[in-house]
Length: 212
Image (cartoon, rainbow, N blue to C red):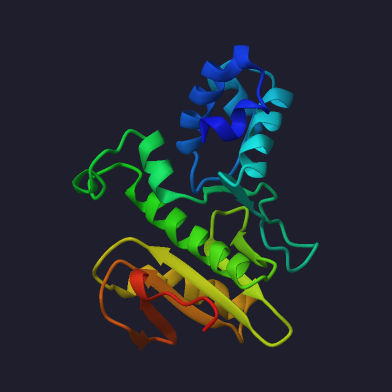
């Protein structure tokens, strides 16, 4: 990784850039705010944008754009930030053992990052353009992944919990009912069972096939 970016960053800034990567890791699965990133490191916003662009060009991070259905609706415009490599992300966050993951304060975000990155990588592997978005309105109602094509719309809610409960899909079902009434609804979770309840298909994280 260091060799990949060394030619793109001024050598005098490499230490700051490495610290920048650790800060960026703490934003995984969150809305991107360049001002906050720049302030945390003590650099200008243009510098933060340029350095994040280097991570994007190096296939370290990618941005998931928000979904817009109607120009009249107030939706969040900022993209969300993710890492391609979940192992690198964990390393940057200081995680060294699998046993540390479950109790880590960012476990939910790490689980979401893994699933979203897997969706994107599957599309790239098939030579497709990753046409994924997230939905989030100004009140914070959110669907983690939205993929729309002329044939169908698929929605994914992502939860790291191993046990299913109806509340996990409450927001998904409510938003789908008003915004995506004909969509295929799915819950990706940390459990082992595949089932369909209340119109939502539950899919274990290790049996994902986004082409299905």
